Image (cartoon, rainbow, N blue to C red):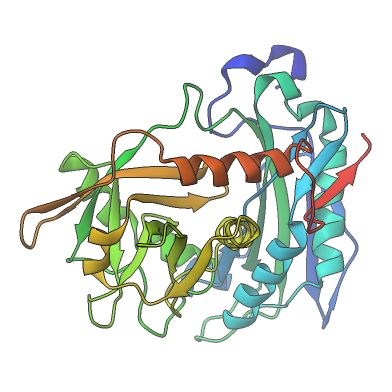
Length: 345
């Protein structure tokens, strides 16, 4: 699709074809050159381990056209390190941070005409994918790895302002095994969540809240996003509380929010969070690249029929955290920690 044919003010959070994607292969023990491609398809051997043994992981990050005309990419080095962790655990070739970031900058630059203008509130979503592309019949790692990246212009997640969601605690399914791949961004984690999400929607809820897979005692993740709660203690001090365990994906958005919360003087607690602690939170939310923050209004526990209520609107601390992070991403708030990579495109 050509830029002039895009309805920039009505972009959804979906896929729109752009002219160029970039790819790099690891073969014979080394990474090759970065390749530019125009086709949307990938040709792989039918015995590629990505198809059979789940050697596949991905990332998600955004580039923003800002008010000053420059393009900012948010924390791509953190995405690079998380992909390194995923690739290493899944026994694929591990790309260097430098290669990952070079490919991100290249795919953004090659598709610069598809970065939504500042006024639209949109962004350029970047999807890096790494797969075992070499053939194997036995259960063992591929001898070839493909790292590819494509982009798509997307609209603002909240076109009409932030809205709270409802969630139901899922005691029937687990997102990941206690010592499995939950800490990586493996594709299989998301495939494993599809049934749970569908059943939650069929029951009338926007999302599901997973409990820890070992004991079903602690809060794990909210759908495909990290969970957090805000508690204000008797002295009026606000606490940013978020679950932490091996089965939870280390969200870059959550990592950023924890730093911002600390900057605001909040007490940051990343630890096991008991299910009963939901009673202590005045605000709750889930966080990730797509929406930054999605407020959680209610959580229903089918075990005892109890509903935890956090209010229908956006809480004051949640709004403050959201505004600060979005302001940094768009170059309107001081980037105190050097999170943005700035491109003059």
